[in-house]
Length: 562
Image (cartoon, rainbow, N blue to C red; front, side, top):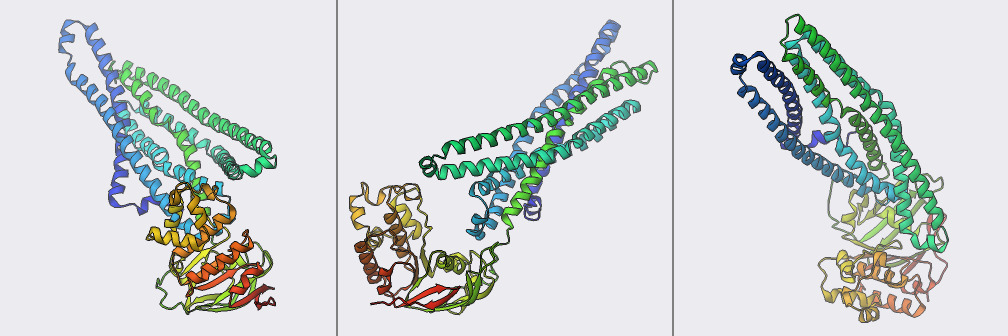
């Protein structure tokens, strides 16, 4: 729980707010106890005075206890309102800090963490588990603090009138606490199962919605529907069992409250018969005993929430501490020299694999070169980009850009030098302008039109219904595959970096468009260093050097350039 010790990282003002919430919660419970405690004495005292005759009725002071009743009633209302306001505000602040902390730990691990976990499960951890962890303050800490502090006060005040009644109350409150704790093991087991099932449902729903077209075309939609319904039935059954244990504990506490009240009534009557208590003090102690158990009833729910909090924190720690990527950012410097890119005897393989994708591979690309890297599918062309940006750790070797180790820099710093148009590019559900400005917010309309012209999208732009303000749809759904690919190339061009990496830039294009794209690209950026991953022979004549990935190393290609 080192990452999520939210209380230790909060400011002093926030800690004071948390303490204020706990104080208000205790005041509300004490006011409720005082209201019933004093009301019992007042009603019984007024009845006794009325029965005793006119002189006793006139001697009975009704104003002071009635004022006390009104005071406790008003204090209960104000304290409860203040407690809800303060505690929920504090809980939301804690959840906000948790989410910021989670994002700060998860983001640098992408995309490695995305391959290690299902997207729906990661989303559940980031949203639902942070909410569950944030409930620790309002739904766990506050109820237990209130129960302890108020119980001590209730027992002490009761002991002032009757020691036997105080012992009965203490035994009842202790029994109620033990009952709430007795369901801990079941709460832990059922909560773990509940969380796992919810995570699976979320993952299946996310995957199903993301690939709804493929599911419908392959006739798998009914299978997915049945699978999700099966998970939902399991989820409902687990919730019923968990609720049954919680309600059972609450019912036992209510039964314990009744027994304790009867014991208090018995000892209070004995005290009255022994002239140790007055008659009005008997209902006062009885109603006080009933009010005391109000702080016990939330404990089963608090025990259940505590199990959810522990599981949520464990899941968040697992998501944020995969250990896949470690970057040394102790010395953040800018790249003063980017005249060459060197891969020095690198060894790399993905986690869980036995064979290296790169095995003591060495490559040097000088500034101004246009280098094509070829090889069969799966040989590591796209992986080269991931290890360059530090998305996955090297087993050995190093990568230097202008003599500086790239892994001492963040991906954001590398992006100032290198632009990438990858195979797994992402287009946002916005307009052409939105997606181009995302690559370079400082771009003018002329810059965007020039980049689209270079990417062979000028004809598409001229026929688009709203020009640059035409929507591309989610993941570029309104575009063809080739158009979406060329839009990603236009994004890379807009960034105007000295190095450009293209991963299969002409895949899916016809020969004429492919030829024009490469000609315009080189004409637009003749000064750029170009690293192109491709299996298309038509790309090679535009390169100054062609290498092939073979047996985990870079070898001169046998393919000749005209």
